[in-house]
Image (cartoon, rainbow, N blue to C red; front, side, top):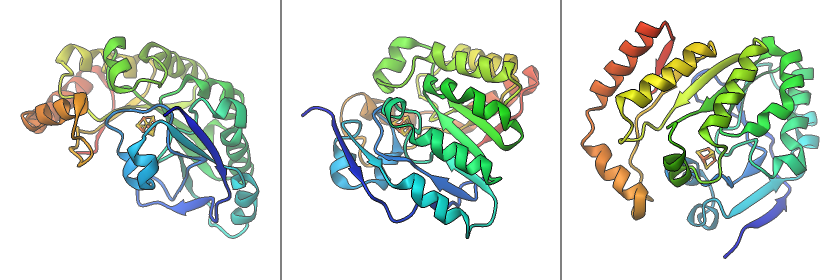
Length: 256
Ligand code: SF4
């Protein structure tokens, strides 16, 4: 079956979030075209979307209007954009929902924490730059190896393009961070060091998380990675990352 796009009306725009550093989460889309093989977000979607992860994307067509109403009653806080989809996946280029949501949140004095694997974010640099005291941007980099990235994150921007996003944001003095997660069991010390060097050169902090085994990881490469991850001494990996970050003068935050 091919890619399927649909539109729904939702009842809420923002939800309370228990994630560290966030007060609310907002997801403009359901599902994610990027189709990362390890993506845990599918666990929070309906079975038909989870089972065909990456092939079904649902646009929350009324979310902008709903958000305008909701904001009147919400305390100001930090909104995570997005927590179970990528707000800058390709459909955003046409729909512009993330752009509108960002404008509304910032205009209403909410802070926004964005996490993405997409170079489309650069479209909104103007808006982010004008509001840099209220925005931070995290770019996920799990590997710098383009071939591996193609296998595990098939439709996300190439790692080199994600690095360009960080470089541009850094040149605009926007607060940035790299999410090194989930740490792929094959990731070697050289890759880890290279990612930390990017954090250093772009003035980003580094969040990292281990690979977590989930029930859907039953076949193919993700199963292999899950098997390999059982043999990884994660505490040793965490120690190495902390040491490399310390040597490079990069702030590191563990989600282990
Ligand atoms: S970009 Fe994020 S939300 Fe989208 S498939 Fe990959 S891990 Fe999941």
